[in-house]
Length: 358
Image (cartoon, rainbow, N blue to C red):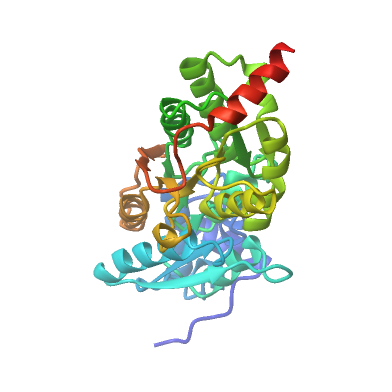
């Protein structure tokens, strides 16, 4: 057997092009993992490399059937380890080994982690709450990944500019569930604590909140907007968002995450308010152990297990060469009522009414 020769130089492009029956420009695009080449044509070029005895460039070599990358933005929020566990279990049952890659402040970026996983020859990648959910991020990074022949699935958030399967909770329905629950308890002035505006889940929760306020309480959109406070997806972010909402007379606050909800509870206590007697609080996620907080948190349960399993199924279909539809699979959330919500405080309602009519 003759040893494989190094990756071809420009002078040899003509040989590869002739063997594959394509142009030299097409060969160059394939070797540089550029988009714009049909899958069948790409395979013909790679086969020509093999026939002529050339080594494939590292990024084009056959990927390991055993490794699947999982990229999460952090692990401090309990919802991300929960997703990692479900996805890892589902992959393991199918004979794959999950490789968890997590971003850290000042550490590796999503792009750097993606490049590292590709260099290690993973069979595919699942992104949980990645840059795909950020409307200000460049979606071209995912097109480049697709051009390299790496299957991937995106969890949380949706972008029509990215050709891939998406798996998401129904964020609009989640916000409406929370508003309907609080309205049924007599709350008329409900606030919402959210993360930065640029994220798709935030925009969708905003839409659901405003629709719920209009349908259940007759609150116009302009007034509903005044009851929304943007901050960070963290306990500190929830605490920062709570004070202005309480000052605006809110007797209940819907939060974009359980961690934000715990921050709202902390802020209320620092202001001398009791939860839920003076202020009701609703979280989002139903993170592990959240039922054991003080008080136990009423929350909107994100369907982590079915979402994680669906993401794995979609990725394995991509790996097997039977791509899942490039669309969004949306899962309905569930209201879980615990001890952080109660009937609206009558005294604060009367005070607010006096202010509005005075």
